[in-house]
Image (cartoon, rainbow, N blue to C red; front, side, top):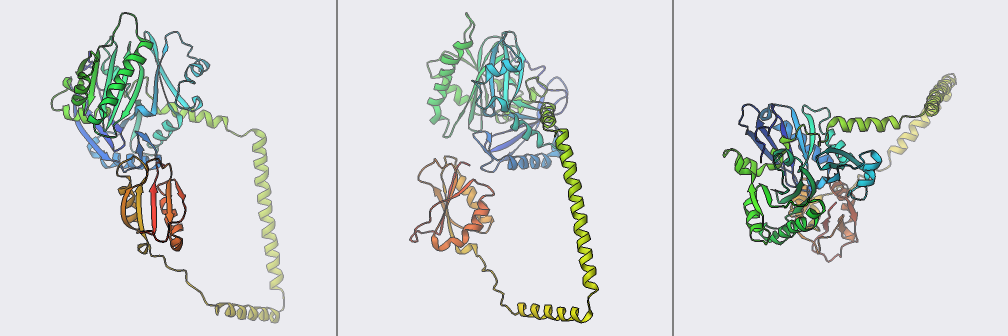
Length: 475
């Protein structure tokens, strides 16, 4: 069932994964027949960088990854990295074995299915016995993640789309099966038939696992009743569910009480007992190690070749280059002419009578003295502590307001309270200020735009208890 013998590579590799709340790293001992986890580490991500397991602030995400790697470099003892792509950032599908895999054929098959524009997609695929496994991701995302390692002390080997590593882990499993991965309040579902992921989805647990019981049951039922019949082979049946991650026991209990007749297998049972806790909490990172060199991954050279091709298409034509050269020549001639005129004027001024020059000098001195007698009014000093600020969370992301409070306090503002807005549907962050306190708007706008997509709303009533109200949005 599980191919433990060929689970891990024969060299040390850092496996990175991420969620809304943390970055995680795992290092597997490569020597000997019995592999084991020799290092695991996680770093809490500030709010607003990753949401629903999608990167929403790429610049800050890059900085966090670089700092995390650099801080732990002595523990890693290798600079080779594989990086997991979350299920929400990729798209899995299965095409029939005899499908047209030319560029036009793939476009015709995938364009109606992809959650993003086909022209924005980077594809990788692998022919199986019954299907062709296809994985797609946004080209810009792949390029951005590759750029984290530009001029870095670490080398990116590949970007591994989750949950594709299970195909290597359960390579001996021939019957159809369902795979569930639970980690950091997210459950990933994958339906596998004939060694091919024919369907995948994710469920975000905004509340507790118990309160999401109905959503979990409905998701599994939908996969079995709607997705599975589209691909199943006559005479086969879906009976097995493989579970991995931090909450598998609770999920198993939830599904066992449903009407579905399924057998459940916990993958942690097949690992060394000393590694079980790490496997449960770092499952995505561990699974990523299994596919560091898989043909379904997105390799750095793939993105660089694509980038090179785009650059080649944008090279200027011969005519444009000639025009650019002519423009440079004209600019140089213009500068030389200007220098000639300047030198000639200076020479003419130097040849005028001394008395006239002295008179002009005196006039300039008098004019300068006269100007210096004008009073200079210093700009008013802005004291941020004179303005009371209230921060409200206008989204369903928890603790967003407290994070904004810490940020504003570090910038010198006086945040008197935080709380929730009247609803959770704010797309952009909204700033409202009393008419009598508008002096703070320019400075506060500049500060907030460092982190948020901002709009300035209507003025607050003068009777309001605070001078400024900030309602945080999703962007």
